Image 1: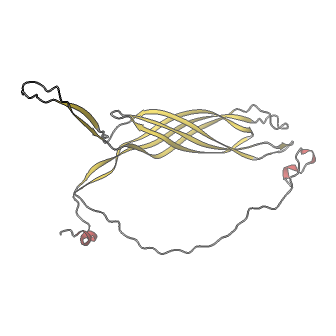
Image 2: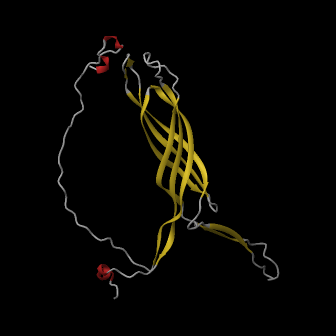
Image 3: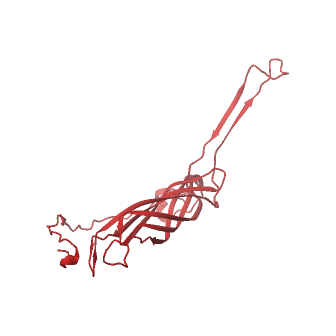
Amino acid sequence: MDESCLSRDSGCRPRPIRECDSRVIRSKVLGECENRDYNPEGIYGPLVAKVPVVLSDVKIQIDIESDIRLQEPAFDIKDIDKKVCITQCHLVPFTNKLFIAGFVEENIQYSTVSCANETSISGDIRHTTVKIPFRCVTKVKFDKNPMFGGSFENELNSLDSTMTCANDEEESRIHFKKFHEKIFCELESVKILESTLLDRDINCTGRFDEEKCFTELTEKMVVYVRIKVLQNQQVCVPKHHCHPSYKESFKCKE
């Protein structure tokens, strides 16, 4: 029986106690497996490789204010867990404008009021999960310029049979398109500073007149998102002196 419901005039109804279905099904201690270390090997230059190149490394500040409504009146916030997801990170070609979009997924655990007396309040723990969207545009500084493609179309003219006038019976054209690697982003780190304002306007206890419940709250967040802007580019790897352990594998000269 719930200890908060021992008093007859508490307004609580005793809950029947039943045997729990949760239990440890199986437990086993695993032994340690042996392994063997290998030194990573690679090809030394000179060579040309296509690798992700860091174009820019930026930390973006995003200010968000959101109003949230819970499913039922809450007495107190027990825990708030957050994670940030980036759904769009697009650089407009030939500019330094980076378009950012995403959301903050927030899981709110809160306590409710089921019963109360002169000395105690009892209830359940509930949760609400919300997705708070954000969208912004920021200027970035390039440490390495992105590489874009191009295209052009040109008309070629020839002479007629007299070799004195342009040939108006034939048209020749040249079409050219050069493609480029897509620019993409990588989420490096996230930092969130927040304040939560509770709108306590519901008398949910009936006994504690000074204690109020709430169903709505306001979140004020300052979100710092660090992002790397990358593009696959061809990079020249210069010649390097081989390590002694690689001499036999790569047949390097002394």
